[in-house]
Length: 408
Ligand SMILES: C[S@@+](CC[C@H](N)C(=O)[O-])C[C@H]1O[C@@H](n2cnc3c(N)ncnc32)[C@H](O)[C@@H]1O
Image 1 (cartoon, rainbow, N blue to C red):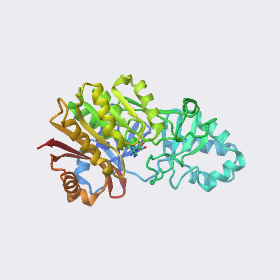
Image 2 (cartoon, rainbow, N blue to C red):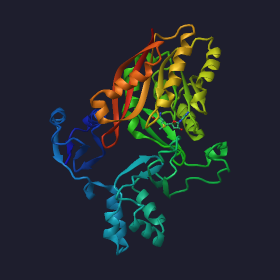
Image 3 (spheres, helix red, strand yellow):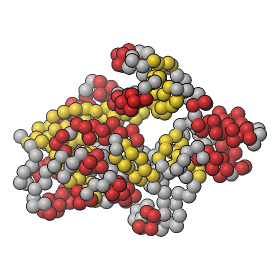
Image 4 (tube, rainbow, N blue to C red):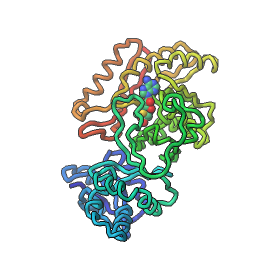
């Protein structure tokens, strides 16, 4: 059974959460228990070294489910069902989801063994309709108007679109044009729900019916903001830009230009909205809503517009489970730049991959990656840092390997 930490000084919560996230040990949600704030971890007894780092906090073991008293959804639902003498109250409470994310104006529930997609809840909604229940529930979440169930994305969809998200309450789309997935109109963009969240002070916007949002990248975004001083005044290429998870952090950190490649038009629209919301100069963000195989041609064209003086210092390769397909593209960008006026001496590739823990522990992931890249003999490839971002599945880590590339 893992430990949860009891925090009496609320000023410590943020740094504690950040540190746990950096170690991949944070478990949400943070909740109140009387006067104390409870921060959950995935630290178990055998992890003594890690426990030692948090010994300033009182701790206790916890079961997976939150105490009902701490969960506003459980409290509200019990009252709602009791007031109606609902005969299936126990069954409904047993399958009630207690975990959710708040992405204004959306309340997004997790789908696990407890879910609104479970049989008791589906039957209840069929019989009584979902409206009254969710209207009452949302009274406890000021500012929220929509409810949905988050579902796993379809792995085979390269655009990682949330085809299976299940809206429960509120209107998510209206009057979309025939080709809304591939060539949405300005009207389509207006006629769907948009969500937002703030991470590390950066606003992210997205349409939850059309693009995924991965909150787990927050530590990697922070690393970009904190670690890479040489972003400032230099250029960055983001080969899988999505809604700007990393692009916005690079630009906030002072990148001169960011060139972004992204297939999904809903994601590029989200990125545009993020640029506006974060008051970033739109001239610094070059968005190509197309396959990144075009990046060489595009970068050549763009280089002409800045008098042949690109200074691409970082290349982000953020596709899971693997960004391998784009490694040769990054290498081609680097050799293209070498022919230009003032190329940086080193370019760092940020390679995102899902990797089994055994390949991390025996370092073969790093060795194999460097061996593959080093087939290009025009450059030297040095693994500079491996960041474990989050667990993707049991024993599988989403990592980012920073590889410094310098010409021989
Ligand atoms: C999982 S998202 C990653 C976004 C962000 N970098 C992150 O790590 O959260 C991957 C994005 O890459 C885009 N994508 C996949 N293949 C692509 C390609 N060949 N060219 C451009 N974008 C691509 C998808 O549409 C998707 O939005």
